[in-house]
Image (tube, rainbow, N blue to C red; front, side):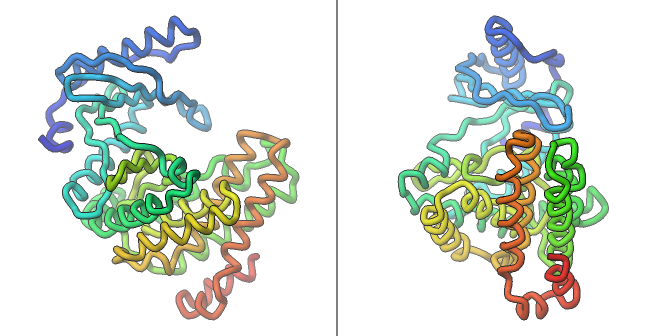
Length: 356
């Protein structure tokens, strides 16, 4: 049975309640998740341990991810605010349906059950190691396979993206991505104890990115919107893509720019460029959307997003890193050849260069 068919048939279970603060409560919460997962998938599930637990920014609730074992094999249960899991489950099912059996495409964990009342999703568990681990030990072939898998995803989800855009009655804009993905907003860095000049620099970069992205027409595809080397699991020839909660219709270049930005900001320069070359070689081999011609503004967007996150998490102590990331963002935009940008986008592209 496909993920979509499973989701159409499952019923609800009772809400899970609050998240734990003590070891005893933690164990009780894992057992409660396992019991609810068992009812959801119709087989006994036993908790193996907690994979992740984090608070959502802005007081948006908590995400708890639990590893389970069952007659189906190892599973993952995710408990989060219902709106979060509902959006993620829909996108995950759509991605799995679109790419299942496609040569060179990604593996997307199959959803076995979704309770929209409790905000609980049960899915198969990915096997292998994070792409970040492969890259750390110099396995660049894994980066090439990941690039190819992402290009296949983008090449096979035009219909999915059209449905998502129709559901929101319009195609998403750069301002939409900025609102959804950047916390705090660049103009709200003051409460994070950042210097006024840093907040101004972040706002200017945000304006320039919005101009650059919206100036260029791009095909709509299903895009992950939070793709980084820890969300990609590689197991031999299989490449898994995880955590679809922020997925939406958009320009495939967003996902590519996100991966490049994470690599270049987190890895040593030589290792980062080796990763970029290998990843882009794989992506280019199956790119049907010309995404690589539009990557630079989205890489800049990633640096802006990371800068604002650093400000939120580290406060004033993170100011030097925030400034470093903003400089990278400006560099990513300014590295675009002026003549090429102008020929693609006309006056808006020149405005980007003037803003910076």
